[in-house]
Length: 187
Image (tube, rainbow, N blue to C red):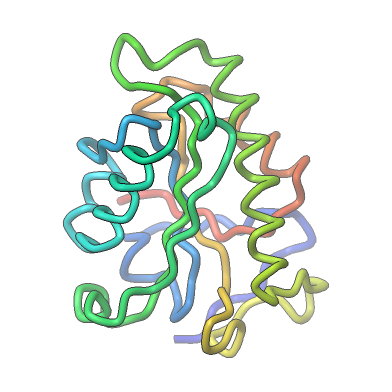
């Protein structure tokens, strides 16, 4: 599958199933809590498709003080024995944007602030792994990334459903941080 090049804006919007249309070595970005639960929405689907990644996330949450995780990202590399679930090796980026979920999720302002920190942390981790921030003409395609190097960044409208944050606020933070992402609107 050849991915269309993004426009000069930070985001290229597509419709479909994030897990099926994201490319090999893609980084699948989602927001999550610091409790270690992937029980609803995108997180639940990730748990079903990537149970080993979920186990790593849960262990990470259980072995670190919850307050230290907020505004950070856990970047989980592809797990060889999970490739069969999507047919591709894919990275999982867990943006820690809330301490909890449901009524205890926190205020939108705090979630937006944590999102900014988590996206900045993600960008720094990607660069440490050799990920290149390209110009528009070089961005995308399955050739991006390589063994041990993350490829394209793909996301859904994180924070908007389960954490109740207006999508435009998270989008503004994404644009401010400057990570190019393919945004997928679920069908």
